[in-house]
Image (cartoon, rainbow, N blue to C red):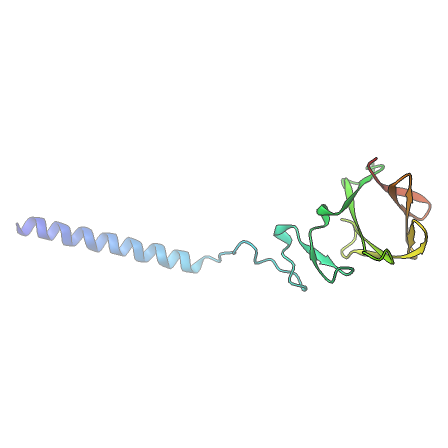
Amino acid sequence: MKWILSTITLASIILLSCQTNNKQIANTQETKIVGSDRDAHGCIASAGYTWSALKDSCIRPFEQIQLNIINNQDSYETAAFLLLDEKKHAAEVFLKESPESIILKHTKEFEYANQDYKLIQDEHCWTLIKGNTAIYKEKQ
């Protein structure tokens, strides 16, 4: 009987010491919580959110108008995303090669521009132009 009691006591001590060691190891490791990657505006990048200056809130650009790259010979990028404000006074373009979205002001019917980019709509499809080169186009 003493032998059984001694064995149970010894097994309990071993098991408890293992659990303590595991807890100590877990506490020393840095753990990252999913969704803890908020940017300066509070947008969660891992969930696909980024800041929209036009909406003044976090949005998922891939849920907007998609513009496909015309020539990806010099880039691995395949798409850009376009957001138009409700009153059509401005457009916002999300490009991988730009750390922030690009705001384009309405210049004339079916056209938005800034100093570097121009966005035009032709035959119901948007085209983004940089300089004199069309770089992204909405799929027809």
